[in-house]
Image 1 (spheres, rainbow, N blue to C red):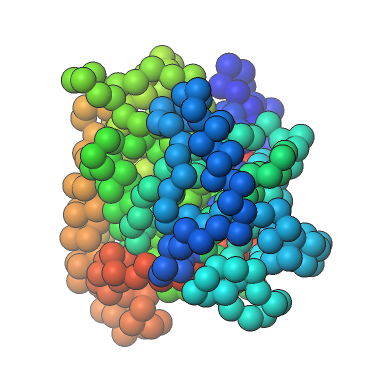
Image 2 (spheres, rainbow, N blue to C red):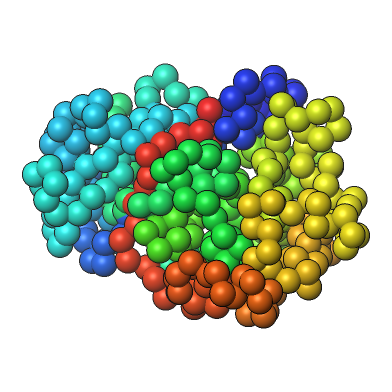
Length: 418
């Protein structure tokens, strides 16, 4: 991530990445899905090291003790050298604050490293020893993703902890990050239709809803476009759990913690006081929803003064129907009804409420988005839909049912940490 909240970040000459408050998690976001989460260990030392390291109650960002989990494979460093052809440069997917992400190949059933081009493609994050992000974020990633499983959460397959080497192995997300599709416009990146944007928003909302409704609530704390990864069918998965934290307990409304996250996405009450609410995540979701509607970045120092912060610039006009049309991304013009756009804007405003208690739950957000997705499209849009898979109705059900192999696209998450 980059900068700590205590000071204003310098203008980013390359706004393709969000200004970060502090190193988020392992710098790249990736997904790997393999049905059989195996515990077979190629490095039995890894398990005993965890037991020893955490016997003195060394906590993680989430506040739990990290224990070996039966659904994660423990790799040796030699295993992952083999899977990546000795971390060759032509295997690099991207570089982020945590380090470098490589593609690799493993056997689909055993997850043992396999020959190049055989088995299942995975993404492997390798810690840069000079990175500001390190053991704590790596540990949080293992602690949460090693225990959580949902179609809209990225799948962690395994890890390596050997001497100073820290690595994470994920399913590979074919379509890369939402950020890439919204903002990095090149010939190889497909533009996102209105239907696909809703599909992605619904999937991400369901992912957050699962975190918030778990036995012990999980606050994600770093929700942004670069941390939403897309599989081959544009099903959204939340990645990068390095800043995740358990929510309040014992009747408390919030937890107090050091302010970490990303400028432009972090909730105002968290930035101002360090008080972190479950609904602080809802604010971040509202920012991403605003990016989906407008096609503009949450922060962009290249925009004129007064327009660099998207929420501050656009929020006052969201409730005005006549101004809303000019705020919407021109690339999706004609693909939605004015009623659908208006309801999406109203939902965004609710998510961006200053007071956390006034924001909706993520469960409600997902339900409202599904209602918007089911609305009738303009006639010209109905006749020009690209494929059934981009239809929002199919999207809503598909986002909850599709949980197989995902892939981290080139550079996924790389910008998220720069």
